[in-house]
Length: 186
Image 1 (cartoon, rainbow, N blue to C red):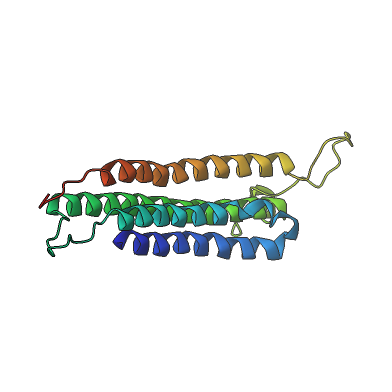
Image 2: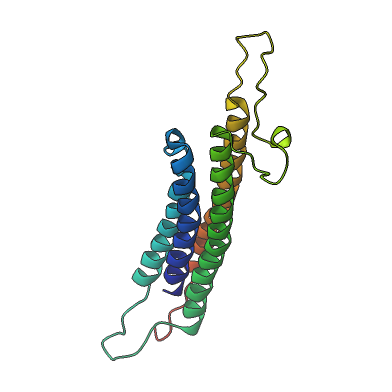
C-alpha cells in the first residue's frame, strides 16, 4: 500500500507544476488554456496506475485459515512489496518528468502565443517570440507565430507521452511481479 502514497504525492506534484504554468499562461493568453491542460490530465492518470496496483495487491492477500494459521508467506509479501515499489518509483520518475515538461512546455507555448520574449534582458529584436514589424510585401504570410507554437506544442506532447510511458512500464512490471505467490501451511 506504500505505492499509493508515492503515487498520490507524485501525480499531485506533477499536477501542481503544470497547473501553475497553465494559470500563468492563461492570464497572458486565455485561448490556449484548453489546449495546454493535457499535462494535468496525464499527471492524473499516474494516480490511477497506483490505484490499480493497490486494489490488486489488497485483494490477493489471503485471510488466515480456520486454525488461525497464516498462509501469507514472506515470498508473497516480498513480491507484493517489489510490485508496489516498482510501480511507485516509476510513478515518481514519470510524475516528476511530466511536471517539469508540463511546466516549461506550457509556459513556452503560452509565451509564443502572446508574443512575449523568453529573453527579457536582450534587445527587442533578438527575442525568440519577437515578430517582425515591417511589411514584407506578402500579405498572405502568417506572422502570428502559430507554426512555431504548434511545433512547441507537438514537442511537448511527445515528451509527455514518453514520460507517461515510464509509469506504464512500471505498471506492467508490477502486474507481472504481483502474480508471484507461495502459500504456506497448505
